[in-house]
Image (cartoon, rainbow, N blue to C red):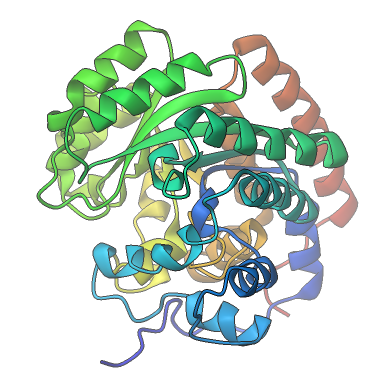
Length: 366
């Protein structure tokens, strides 16, 4: 099978001044999986300590192998996670990985990040779900204290796991509400695993006043998004790439200000869109949807949030003002208490204004 080019041909040499300006923009990453965002160096070190076989023996080679450019569909993309999950089965590793997750984001100009993960995937080594939560939240808090980047957690259930898994994850998320967890999510392969099978878990989360986001419109069509919105009560949609295929639902999502957590590079890798330039993100922005741009999995997609923003400029022709607007949309869509969100967005609006004034009219290409 040929390797899929994830971006398409760029439109010209990238202006380093533009990249620097984007990196300086304060940004929020609302859709980023903890188990898909390890440092290659940490994955290598932790694997060697545990005697785990790896497909590569250097940091650079391992990072290249972990990037998924040969997937036929979402399920192929998800297969790489067995490698990262193998080193995420003890408290010390989870703490370290969560801490590095925040530190790496902060270096990229990310000022708020939501780390999503499924605790049930981290108990093979004997940890309880509560011990998993404690370790991850401790690592996120350490990263936040060191960098100033606010870090919160989203607990995921998996579509392919049988009931009552989703309810157990929803109960866990609610138990840690106000202690670092800000939302409940449903992830994993969509096709053949409808969200409606787990709807009671979403009822539980909403009845306990916890925000809800659902992966939908990535591995399946707009009917999956319809279920997420109307049966699961989603406040945000993870991906939502195929929303454009249902004009009525598209209008509803826009009218009701349901935020889209868009992950363009990942969507190309999973073949949801053929190329970055053909991603419907530009359409959703033009229609006035609440759009956020995110990394999904920094390791498997080989991207930083700055990379995603720059690629939006390269392939979708977004200027710096449009990218600044997308950054503000991400802060507005954060799953935070109202007062905390307003304080954060006001501070970020001021910083974004300062960056734009400082860099002037800088273009993406030389």
